[in-house]
Image (cartoon, rainbow, N blue to C red; front, side, top):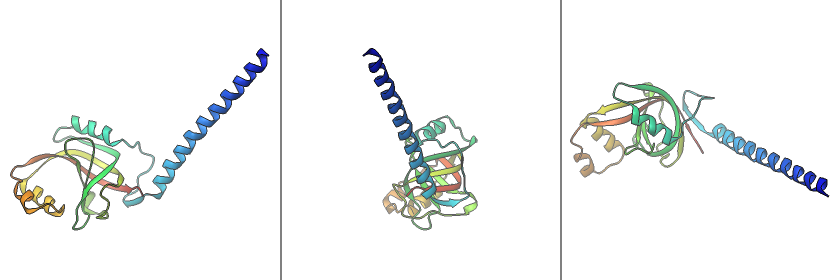
Length: 169
């Protein structure tokens, strides 16, 4: 009787382990499929450690003006240039989103990707953005005249120059 009970427990544990492994493999397969379906803009990037938006936000907390790091991270788009798609802002859990521009103005992203998840690869750094550029970006972002006129001083900004962007479906 005891032997049958032990045999039953062993059998159950084997099946439960296989089921957990199967679920893990299934989740990995879905993630790979999502990356394969992503629209690519700019240069392709593969097999790179992708940071979460929170991890990227933590990195920005430790950057000082003049520091630059290479990074790949994913996050949700908050806004996009409505003239050409020549910049986008992505949430990293900080007070302000990351301002992402594209290397050498070499590619643009669609103007309708707000709220979509993206994976970006490139260089992260901190910049000081002059009033005129902030006002120009606010105009491109569809801000009101009142909001644009309220910009009166330079601002330190979380910046990123992307060499590649993948937009998840």
